[in-house]
Image (cartoon, rainbow, N blue to C red; front, side, top):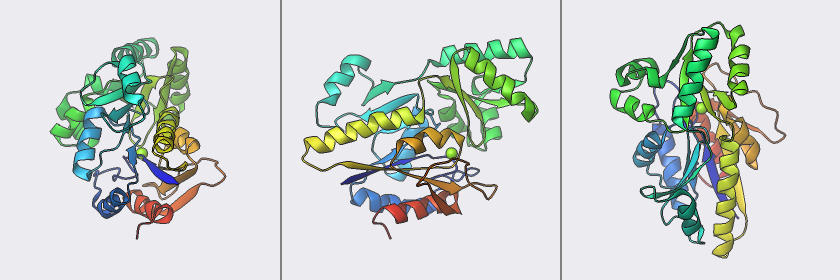
Length: 279
Ligand SMILES: [Mg+2]
């Protein structure tokens, strides 16, 4: 049985506020030694995923912008998926890309319309400079540039009382888009873009791969911390949540949900130790 780890980044593998991850590094090294794929499944962009793969020494496929697209490194799967994928998505640098989301331009247009129709104070990443995003998200200007390089999702600040949320969500749905509310920002994205759908696509690819190389089945573990992780948690066999900054857990009803005692990275380490042979 081959195990695959699907993991959220912000507030899960990475600290929600300072993006630290030191405690996770030994676990990631152990998973790598065991050949366990570590699939980032995050709101982050392609550029940010590439950055965190580099610093964390991970080189498996990843899911960007809340399921907007699946990026598979060239040559990763051996069962013939690549030729087929390239036929559909064309050459995309060193990746085969499966796009599920709407384009960034469409999403920006929808937000602009909602702002005009409701008068809500909505500020998208696209309305801010890299310096402004850096200050708001507690990022370096360099990391803010990577965060702004969005393709399938727009993150925005909703500067209105919470009771107006329902109107915002109804407007987004009316325009044919989906939304999530992660740890820090609201997000608008294509209706077909969700983490769960992307996880299922990748799980099928892993199953085909291991069947092709004569292995057994695939067992999936997923770990997250907030609302944008629910579809991912529902798509894996073993869902797990880490404690959030408020000291509680994401409210989701799943029969075998594992709740880690630790918050953020500490909880993530706990989940990896519990479900993988890592000490
Ligand atoms: Mg998160």
